[in-house]
Amino acid sequence: MTLLLTNTPFNIHKAASILHDGGLVSFGTETVYGLGADATNNHAIAKIYQAKGRPNFNPLIIHFAQLEHIFQFVEKNDLAYELGLKFWPGPLTLILNKQKNTQISQAATAHLSTMAVRIPNSLTARQLIEYSQKPIAAPSANVSGHVSPTTAQHVYQELNGKIDAVFDSGPCQIGVESTILDVSGDYPKLLRPGGISAESLSSICGPLSFKDSVETKITAPGQLSSHYAPSLTVRLNCTHVLANEALLAFGKTTLQAPLSVNLSPTSNLEEAARNLFANLRFLDTEGKKLGLQKIAVMPIPDYGIGRAICDRLQRAAAPRP
Image (cartoon, rainbow, N blue to C red; front, side, top):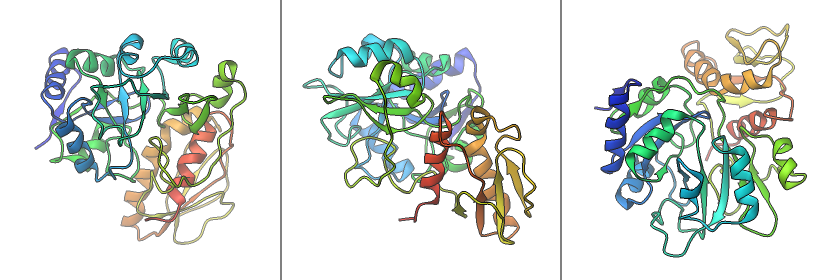
């Protein structure tokens, strides 16, 4: 049975102790709920992959509480340090070359020469990391390929009995995963749009573009073509709704559906991102009860955090493996 821990100082220490001892604890960040384990413990990392049903070629993001701690495990470069100073703690993941003889589990990095690292902008998440005295590997706390969780209840419904504890730190404030930027080579590459926009990063990196293409080789988390998917089929950029479809709306609309929810009636992209995964889960659960077969999604602007929303929706709509 999975423990459901409320947000108290005692429970923060309890959750950190479970992590330190090789257990699995889900905890909230500003992006989504992560499934945490000691990143230096091979057995604990294996339990993450088993609980999620995650393919072992898909690396994990390693979470830290302090900037200088990161560079004990990955090679420091000027660009990474400047980005870290400006955007950490926050929803930015950097891909960096690993230090030789790093203590991080090879399984956590899918045996790559690089590592995905970030510092979450959540005080409780950083406290868990600090108190556990370990770097924490933490992919999203859901079955691999399913809709990401943004509340403790989402995690508990999906992973109860498969992990040791869920630490309830409240709903996530951003609602989509971190931006992933590869700074391990000669020039930065945007691998996944997320909570930090390409426009914001360009102040340090110069212009960045995200190429929405299927990767033949996974080099970082978040690159699978089919991901974030409800059980109902997703149809994008819809201007009409079929009789067997639920509606995921955005902004003002006259469209009618047997079941509908609006990401943001005022067309606010930050609100839409915050609501995205919870709304997909709602339409999926309630749509199946009504016998619906698809989710029709209205067009979403592809700029700022809207680019991250569009990326998640495209992967949700991709052919299932």
